[in-house]
Image 1 (cartoon, rainbow, N blue to C red):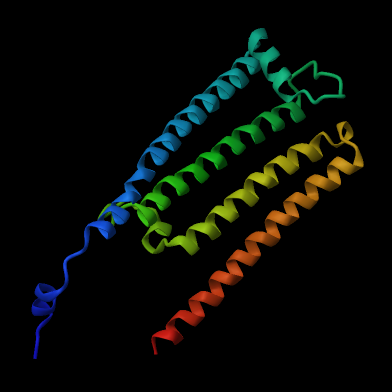
Image 2 (spheres, rainbow, N blue to C red; image 1 turned 180 degrees about the vertical axis):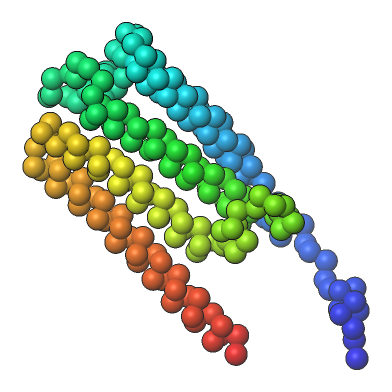
Length: 203
């Protein structure tokens, strides 16, 4: 009876065309490196906004002007002071940056692990919990969930300045958010169906 080692020895060699096709996955590496650079841009933007907010709190007029310009909405008078609503809008903007940064991390780490090469992080103490069972379906669900969170932040910012928008704009943004929500539920449901049907196929 042949042993597993014998089967390995007699396994046919991979042809040059399959090798080239399989190696083409490394073409995605510059894309993930580019996303890392985009992450650096978001980190810089976050600290600029945070430093302006802190400077405005301590009376820096230049920082205050930048903050008020950032939260101003077309069609509405520009805020004149750093009040609760202004601070809330700035903080929501910072949270938005953080959530987009989290989305980038999921795409970079999860995408590289799924489509390019294993990172061998099983023994690393800081390995993300979701990375231990990541695959293309799980990654899509998590990305859809992150997009819903980002959409929620934008919708909340719109509702805070609801007086600056007409009813059509508010309804449109709400409908877009609900579309994201329904899409995420559909992706999660399809993933659940696949997870239940795959074991049955093995039998």
